[in-house]
Length: 130
Image (cartoon, rainbow, N blue to C red; front, side, top):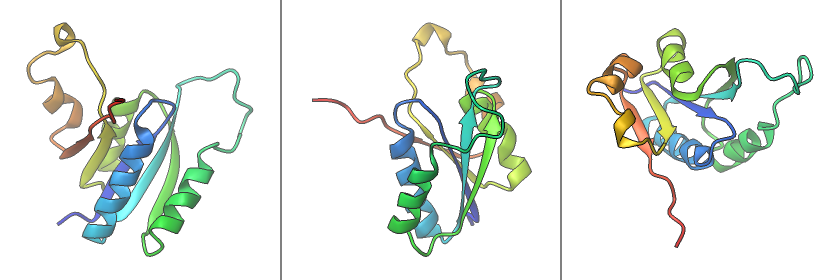
């Protein structure tokens, strides 16, 4: 049974679709949606204690899924690595990420299993431009 779904939002293309998909899955499973605003490990341009620019997207999510329980948090680090490290700490049963195109030469057998720690993952395909 899925009780908590984790999704990250950042500047990468595809995160909005991943957030939408995570919301739909959370609603279908009656699960809590944990939204993590992913920030670079150190951003010298960000004001100390600055509010997230992604609050508007959470408001849209709340309007689209009014019965959805949403927890929001901020984490520093790189996308997938940060999400998969957070998953057991926040009790996530499923992680939703956008598709990232990786050069085949960079792929190594078993990397996905080591990265995710065995946590189930939904990869949301990138929308193709026609």
